Image: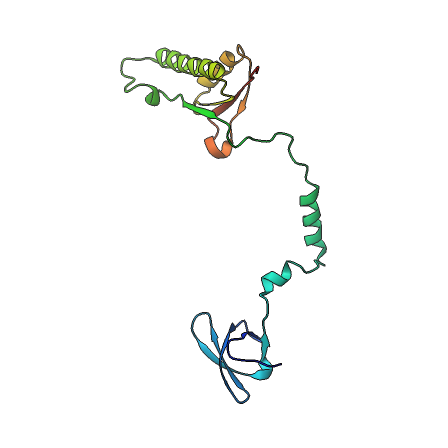
Amino acid sequence: MCLEIGNKVAVLDADIRGVVTKIVGNDIFVLDNEGMEYRFLKEELVKIEVEQKELSKYSEINNPILKAKQSEQKNKKKSSFVKDRNEIVMEVDLHAEKLVKSTRGMDNYDILSLQIDVAKHKLEYCIAKKISKLVLIHGVGDGVLKTELHYLLNNYPVKYYEASYKKYGQGATEVYVYQNY
């Protein structure tokens, strides 16, 4: 093997890679990525043409576990529901403190009525403007608002279900508004 200054090399018995900087007889000096210079014998080095990660892209996988995982990923069925990236989703936070400056003087019935009125108004807006998704953030609580929302939604041409737990937690309902184009 003919090594020259500037060649990329790897050490056979150590995890060291670098560039040949100097050749003195049978001794070869290698500068690694951290700036350290090492001295090795010619027999201890291997010339690197292509990085290992590039080579492994084309290698055959003989491990049965890895083969099984690859075939699993290929065999997974794709969902028939394709989410449109440009889809408009309206989010409405129905927490009382988000709807009014102060709840002073309001009892639970007044707050619940306000929350249902806002939800109804936003739902009708979505239907009128042909917005297909509405997320109603109601919180967890005792479930009174959630129950009232589901009762309200049953009177409209919509489908509703729990919103993404990852994004909203347990306290949100996603509403799909059927559109007649």
